[in-house]
Image (cartoon, rainbow over all chains, first blue to last red; front, side, top):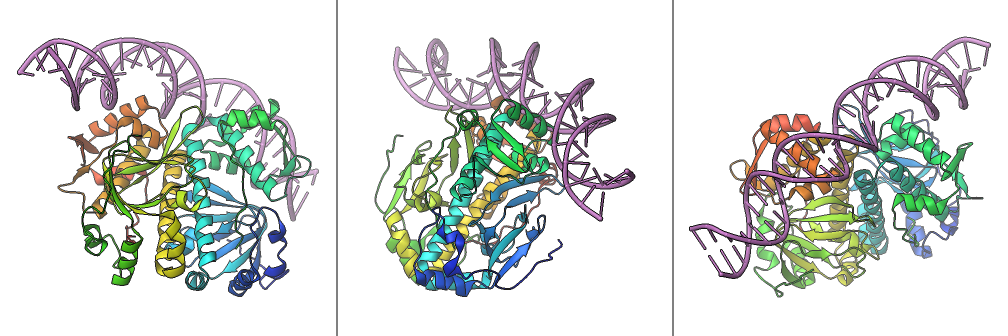
Length: 251
Length: 251
DNA sequence: CGTGTTCTTGATGCCTTTCAAAAAGGGTGG
DNA sequence: CCACCCTTTTTGAAAGGCATCAAGAACACG
């Protein structure tokens, strides 16, 4: 929508990317990082609520989310909307959209975000010159599919309370892996409407179930930050396996 | 399960692969096909119901489904199961499982299937030597994610009747693109339990809704074959966009 | 401090689940 | 070819979870 964005190479070069220092990410050779930096054409800041990729777009670029949260979504003709998955710093944005001829989904910034732009035209180049990066690109694509798999399983099989518990736990772990958790709490920028769209529930029922779990002492929300008060009980209610996260590539 | 399978290079070499002749698939150079053939180590036949990849498996190979149907699924600790997507001839089987360290899902043969085996160890080789094939591998991965996106949207946003209509229409188009539709009907090997697991509905409600749509004249099922009697109405009830399929790579 | 948005809460009704059992197939052995 | 058993499908009845409608409360913002 209102793409009031600042262009230009803001901030530090990829070699000194602060994200790269986080233990969540695999080490890369200087060679690889230089290639990434050469491929990167832009560093943009987009306000919360802006469309990073809009549904049907046929010239979507590939991005890495540098900071902030975003989400992928898909709409039905009558306006119903499903949030497919959430994107956190370090995640690829628009891989599917830049590989396929047109985006079958939209991607929206949930908070103000910073993205690193990689033109779709250069992706082929990456496959030719940097097979290791190409492999990691595919790896990240599979990882995203894995997250959608989880969400589909949640929406298809869990009831309202379990879905919320599973979402909260999963986001907590993802934020934790990025060092975004401090004193048990992390920034939680979702509105109830967005929660509802992600969970496949109505706004009203989401609100009621959400406050029921809060009152049950599973977690608390204040000042836009969520505190996981009872991780044990939350995980149990979610009926979730908790695979350890493991490191991943950052491109 | 009962992996009573016949090994060996059954049938024709890849250069003469009958699947490749179908208009659904992109033409490939002889070079590419030769590489694929060299990479292929086996051609297996597995009976209906067998596990092609089991959940948690950490040495899953990559396959191309040569004939038959399969599905990816994910289970919760208490036994609830969600079918994530269906696999038809020409689809990759186990890309996610062979890229990530362990399979987060299972893949089961829905009918008797034939699969072409590509050892996971050689995937890296493919990225180094054949960037075009590597690109197409990623492309196929994105296409699968796209299908999971659709299913998540269906389960999250559509009611029972709409979900069934959407599934039937989608499978019809996929079968049609493969030339599997004759006289308006195609083989439909799903049990109601599998339908229910794919739709995120109970078995009973699936059965009732299914027969309601049949009685409404949307489609008919007999002798294991489904006939789409009223495509217009079915698509309308599904509230679905029908993007034209387009060709895709076959690896 | 007014105004629009987001969140909460209550009441009502329907879609879906669960429980239960009958009916219909499918395969095997006598 | 029929009897028998097991699985799958169908149908009925009752309960409950979730959606919808409606309106008040809390919050954000200019």
